[in-house]
Length: 277
Image (spheres, rainbow, N blue to C red):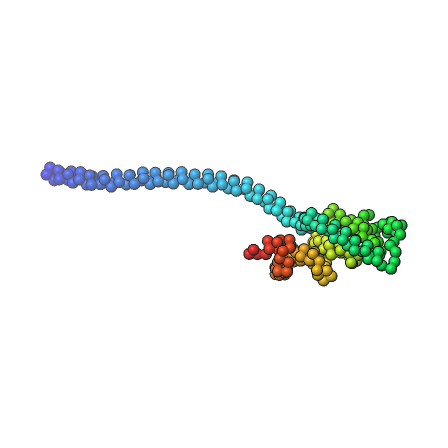
């Protein structure tokens, strides 16, 4: 029996030794897995914290973007109104001296015609009577055009034109429209008549009556095709066409300005608005 017991004991020990290394390897694999899981968990926690911080930052920035978008929309709503006023100031700054010179030249020409004509000049009291003409309804207290367009009324023409322009500058666009239109009808041969029609169209544009603005400017083109206001009138037409969504028509109008009046200030603005230029 002892002979059989010894080999059995040796066999048991051998089996035990053979079984021990896999157990250690399994224990080692479990520790590595736990370490990797812990490392992954730490990394995930860091990502969650970073994501939370970024979301908070985005929410803060989003509120600022919403406010900015509202401001942009308000600015867009004011562009049409401000554009007309901007063009008034720019035009008056650049053209004031020229307008005065043309007016005086026209006055001198009319006086020469009167001196050489069959009738005598108007009596001194006549001009005063004309100045006392009551204001036309709807024109405002400053607008008092005479009922006649006599050559001797140049000073009255200037005052009527300036009164209408002041209405435009003050933002009273309905009154300015009516005043300029009345001026153009009352003084159709005045050197200021093309400008009056041009500003009437601008006043309609400022009121967002874009179709009426186009019609008024086209009337200027037909009545005074050689006027220096023609390029500006075309530019106003293009602006109105853009507001109406007629981009093709606006592009054609801008190209017409560049082609026919390449050296005008309006052509420079048209080039800026044309795509690809």
